[in-house]
Image (cartoon, rainbow, N blue to C red; front, top):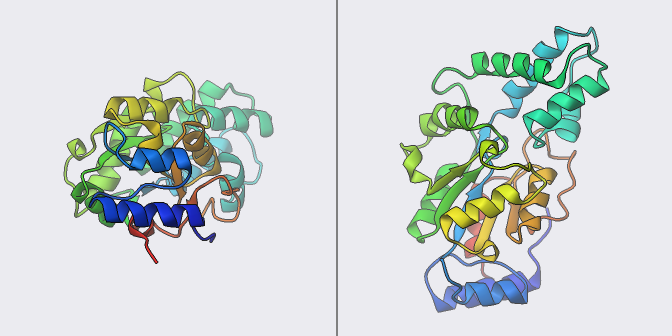
Amino acid sequence: FPLLPLAMLGLVVAAAAAFTTLGDSSSEAVDQAVGGGEGGRALIFDCDGTLVDTETPYMDAFNQALALYTDAMPVDNMAWGRELAGRGLETDAEYAVREFKLNATADEFLRHWKRNFAKLTKRRGSIRLLDGFDELIAHAKRRGWKVAVASSSDRAGLRRKLINGVLAHSRAISRLSAFDTIVSNDDVSKHKPDPEIYLLAAKRLGVEPKNCWVVEDSATGVLAGKRAGMRVAAVPNEYTRGTNDFRKADVVLKSMAEVVGVFDWAP
C-alpha cells in the first residue's frame, strides 16, 4: 500500500502541535483549512463494502435473480468487484440486463434482486460489520469530529443495513442517532461517482468539503469523494482489492482501524 505523501506528514505534525483534534491532510488549501477552518471536521462513511459486508449477500441475491432469466454462469467475486461493486443498484441492474441480454427491464430485475437481498439480510446480526469501525468512530467522536454515512442505497435499505449490520455488532454505538446525518440515494438525483451525495452530507453537517475525510471501498466511491473536494481513505474489501484502481485515493489501507493512524500519524 502507498505511503502517505511528505506534504501530508508535515500537515499532521503541525496539526498535532496546534490542537488536540484529529489532523486533516495534504495540500496548501487543506493545510489552511486544518489550521482553523469554519464548521469543524467530519468523517463520512460509505456503507456497502465499507461499514458492512453487504457485497456477499448482494452478489448472492444478484445471482439468484439472474438465474430467473438465464442459464449463464453466475457472477464471481472478481467480476463483482471489477464491474458491479460500488456503482449503485440501478446501475448494476442496467448492467445485468445489458450484459446478459435478459428478457426483462432493469426495474424488473432490480425488483427480484432487492427481494432476494431483503430475505438474506432481514435478521438482526445477519450482516457482518467490517473490522475497525468501532475504533474509528470512537476516535472521531473523542476528537469532536462530526460523523455521517453517505450511501448509494435507498433509504429503507440503508436503514436495514445499519441496524442489522452496524448496530447489531458494534460495541461503540447502539443508535442511529450516533451519526450526525445519514444520506441515501433517495436524497440525491445523481449517483456516485458524481459528488452530489458527499456534498449534501457536508452541507447537512455544516462542514466545508475540504475539512472532510471520506472512507470508501471502491474506485467509484473514491472518485465521488475526490470530486467533492474531500480527502479519501480507501479501504478495499475482498471484492474490490485487486480489481479497483485506488490511485486517486489519498491513502489506501487494510482496515478502518488503520484510518485512525492516518489522522494521528507522526514520525
